[in-house]
Image (cartoon, helix red, strand yellow):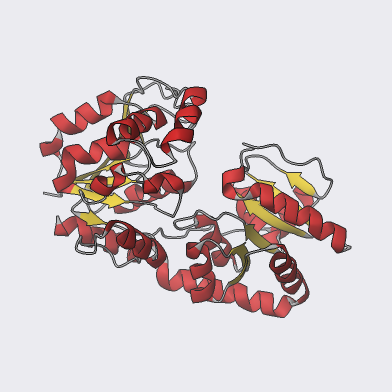
Length: 390
């Protein structure tokens, strides 16, 4: 009989199409033919409020059974932000940090109770991303059957004392990159826990038919840099807007910055910065094909699927060199450039715009990098090896 596994993640659904949640869904869908696969999650869609929005307790999404549990209390953002200011200074007790985690959410006692009562119904539990209530408290219930996909990077929460214990609990760890593995093992001294040697991540899929011209006509955009992701300060967007505005003052031309994603912060009312909001996958990939290059200003990434998608489309990328993961992608692939201040940003932008042949070569290098490292058959074999270890 096929082994039965469960992915545990804070939110899950076709409406949730980014970050760790999308990685979880793709892993579940690609491994379901090898294992009886279920997902244990909440009824929340929005990661800020954690309001219960999915009405059903169970549903099947792309052949995977999804079990949903109610969030007991939505996040009180004002109280949570006030508590975070204290907790993230690192001078709190474990009990205070765990209360912060409860407020961080999604606070679902029903989900944790299900894990506790149904532990023997599953052979392996796979927890996606270290940061949330579902992983922190759920892992404690089934740690001896658990794989952790940490999605970790050097940010304030990971330095809280409560994570010292949590990262030692799982039987195996599935890292997204070598940089993530190096950081987590150095931070928590867990080199002895079986892992995938830092070669994890996702398989990259792009549509068969992509049309740059279709995007140009639809959005009247011809010469532009493209940003894809949540538009918020934590993702480096404030600095990106400052750098781009300074660039336009110092460099004449028609270059625009196009943004795709939910606006969490206000976008400057500048004519050459255009926010398209949330777009379809078709528009996203057509936009990647049409852009001059992809820009990703975030300092905090554990993988970055959009960089890999840009590579797969044959586009070079420009990333924040303060993020070791993004810098590592560029160095290993020779498919992109990185900057650490404005003048490096300006120099990289001009190089990518002026050296078109080199930019094309970088895009092809990125395509080969994805082909050799981020195909689904390779990824699922790596995850299956850890599942079989347990």
